Length: 349
Image (cartoon, rainbow, N blue to C red; front, side, top):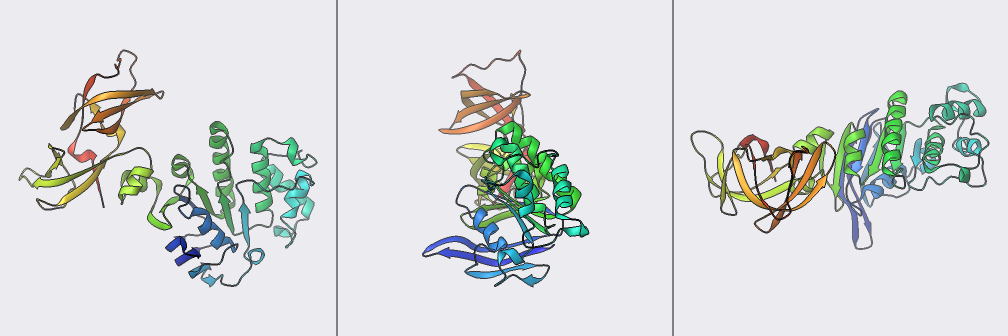
């Protein structure tokens, strides 16, 4: 199924939850809505599902407007944040409940469809178990099987793993992605977890205050953020504001930032123009790089293959990620020189 949102806005009284959201999700795509709490992710999902009516704008499935079409007639499967399993029903009955409005796809019986789905989500033999006897991960998979029971053309997942621990989240998101790929069902996934969005998605839409800031594949959004918000929200980043000082004949631009002068590539601006650019923590190197700065070490975090350094520079915090070496020690309060090359920056709006 191909999904389109065109200029969708949603207002609650004087509060604007969505502001002219336009998105296209291709057939079979795993598409993620990511952003901070209150940015409009869940409201967008609810407008797609039919639980909310847009104040303005249109939602179309394969070119057909969904205006006035109730949720049960949209052919959409939904997995909620709290799973919403029925405690008085067994696992098998919960999954079968997804077939209350339609016959199972493929001409199979309801029992056969339930068995197929429990095998798909690796819960064979759990048919008679009660939901309360299951772990959080098992309940999440039951909810997924129930949503898939009618064979929906569109699957909506509203932060389905937010209550799970980090290790289980990683394992289950791989399972969900594998199941989605096997079935080829168009999927909209909502999360506030940037790493999760980057890990599972074909494409990502970053939302902020009810508006779409950027849409792209995970690498594009991470490496080439289009706005200051995306640069700051998706992964760690160091964002600088400066002014172009000159355009030397040797190439690039000389940019002045807090009395430092750095040569940067990719700055298509004239002398005197303001410029905002970002440098990812992993782009910095100790005692190297074409553009250097000196900062005071105020924090370290061991993260396995890398050590995360927090520096105080000109009264602001910078984050630097360096390869961990047990022979290297960092003393709190010491001064460090770090640098980055001219082509390691990305200019944002």
